[in-house]
Length: 287
Image (tube, rainbow, N blue to C red; front, top):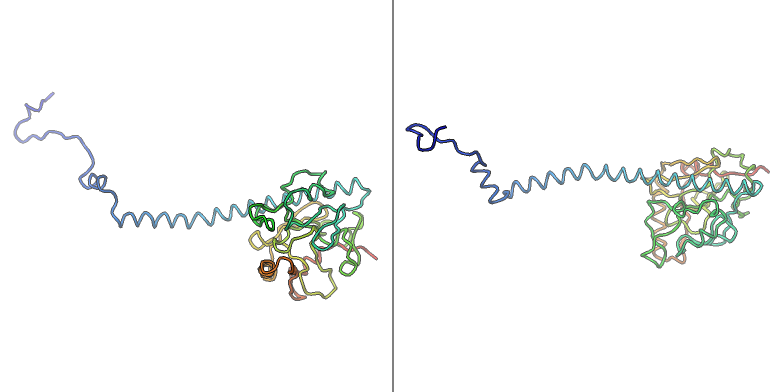
């Protein structure tokens, strides 16, 4: 083994490897401003690519959860009819409140507790409060900004709802769901946050010539809403026209201006494909 003393002329002792002069300088003094800006720009680009994907994944998860909620609620609705000789759960309302004995009670905008859900005739068949509310609904109880609403779901007015001016032939028994058939007859709908009040979502029957959405279905799932049907399944309907989305903004503006005097109706045209589709899902009893 050669010692340092034995190294002769022309021989160079091996030096331990370490960071280069430039790297040592960078470690001592940090990144330059340009390098820091490049790193920030790269992070911003990555965030711009990832955040939309994460948002879409979250929205997809919320729509799946909403579909499952309405399926569970419709199953409770079916159990109620089985236990009551085929009679459907009442869907009666007066003004902005659903009446005692109905599938739900109260007004979703002002209910400050789940008591009106628990008093509904469907609650004994599924005591999970979460199935009454869409996970994408971020609205709050009127006058209680810290309190999320307990319900975003309503039942179509073609079922067990007495309103002779609007619904001349309501269906009150399960066996009467024939036009359309249970696979096409809507039961529960996720309702627009500014339209919802009592437990009935009004849909003008086909053939009336009334060109309006009596109440608005929700569009919170990327311009789509969830409906359940008489056979127990649920679907996510993409709205093809602009009026449901525009109507939601109009109702919100009117509600914020005067919560005690606003209309949940949205005018449209008789050729509105979303209105026609909704009307076709309303069960009508044969005369």
